[in-house]
Image (cartoon, rainbow, N blue to C red):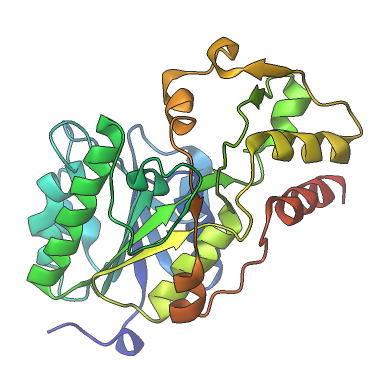
Length: 297
């Protein structure tokens, strides 16, 4: 029987303590939570100094003493992508997680890429997935596997399909300053985005009111062409935008090119209706302006 959250201390274990998970972890640490996390390499010394119990994890190197590492865990955040063999955390530690009496919430960070291409039309959580590549197909299978695990073990598992993530240290302002920003000439192409702080807010709202077997789109209110975002950011910096270049001549990586293969607008009403989320940055203009203001404060 699961222990009510109000009767025990909270401990978050992040499989994959990266950019988005790190923002949530820092917020919960400030509230007195215990936080642990994994990295494919040992976590940096500053993470340990911040109070994070760090562990090395890869498919080939599972946790050597999993029950000791996971002891006391009440919440688990999963952000490690699946590989050709499936989800590495589920494969290596699904049985260990099932043995945790106090586990009451699992959040799986997925991607809106699972919807595939919709020619710029709107999609929501009821839209059937139609992944356009192997990476997205693996995501769909991992989502399904974790939701089924939750149903089998009586743990509230939620899937969070994240749009393009930006925030401090990872945004087009930095790219413009570095001279690496691309302004792609791709008329009609639309992307959805989400500020990393709003991702953390959605996760915290889900922790407060977990809904088993639920999927949420995590994106802002204003899908927009990438070109418009670059133009706006350049204006904030008082500089001219880079020249338009055809996608075929952009020199983007294969992964970056895969994002340009899909065209859709993503709806976010469920996080507002069911979780009560009020986005701090409902569009890219608010988010980028806040990043710049924080940098110059």
